[in-house]
Length: 302
Image 1: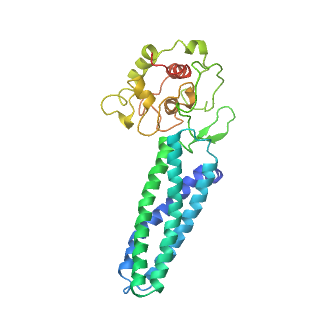
Image 2 (image 1 turned 60 degrees about the horizontal axis):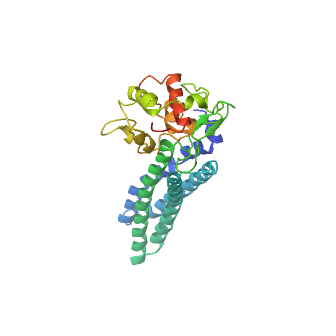
Image 3 (image 1 turned 90 degrees about the horizontal axis):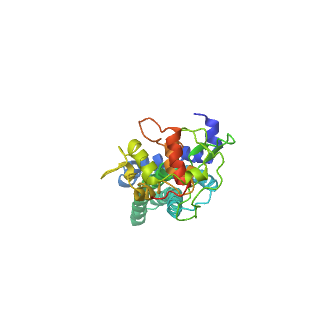
């Protein structure tokens, strides 16, 4: 791994920095239980636990800062579902900063204050530590959904410039209006991935139909996994409605009018992982071109 590239990318840096505070938060559970339940046997344990959670809070703060820098690089999130997940992830991130710091303060209070007040502070500190562990689990889940479900922050190569960019969010079909036929298509980005992309002729694209061209192609190449009662990842490609609905994670599989921004095409080319078809021979350039032309012409059901 090229460490300099990690340091240069806010998204890669955030991904690298979040694991330490998450691990510290989980590992702090047995420590605080010992500190709260056996104060007489280990009289200095509450001070040590307070220092531990204070350090955890500082590490979480650093990770939160990298997260804010990464969020600043995202394109406008037109998809409301992605906006919601990002907002929840941000709130959870702030909670991971606040909870260990509050836990540290409560542990200090329980150490220096005897009697009922100290016991209450110790109990509240333990509850905060448990809440922190729960929040960490939810934050990890939402972060994984953003990266692996939506491709947020995934580095991709720009075939035109050779630069490395990150995925912000694809445009949902309910947000933007797309033309029935693409009127001008130049060499799209990400041309370094395979299968290679071909220029789309709008007149030729208008002749491609779902029933005659796309459905048989998907049946040959994709139905083994993405059809039937329980399709993998909840993605049923056997019907036009299933394609537009998408799977359990990434929303609609195609964005009518935007073939190279569609998750289906990005997975077929390996821009989004896993590359599809998984553990099978990749599509030919002609097969990919057929799918892209259909999407460019509006992804009609006929």
